[in-house]
Length: 149
Image (tube, rainbow, N blue to C red; front, side):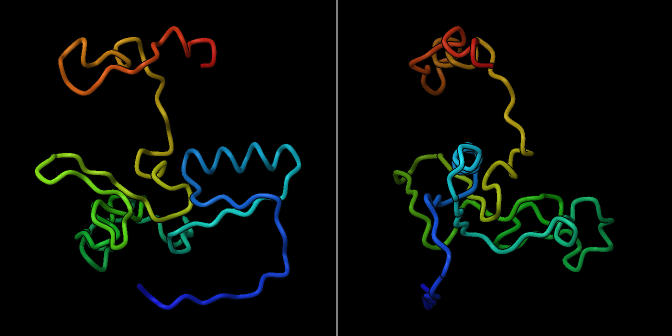
């Protein structure tokens, strides 16, 4: 673990949110909209789309020729910094299991990994185990959330 630098901050906030992904980002939006002063703390490096978006470059324009790096597992052809194996990651998995958890380290969190969209689920998405025996059925169904779409 690297050195921790503590800087005195003259600003005060009503709420501090750790992580700006789908949950943190929406929470910050709703709280700020309600008039609270919100601070978001993000784990990733500064990401400037004007400078850092690389997936539209030609392969020969990439200094790595599109090869991946620790924080860009899909090379230049991904708008997300993160990965499955990040030092200090709090998530674990049982030995011998196939479950991997992608962690994004940038403003917007993992929403960047899934294209900054959340597709609407259909009735079958909530009952996959009943349909094909894989995963688990959700404790709620499509009809339960349909009014909120």
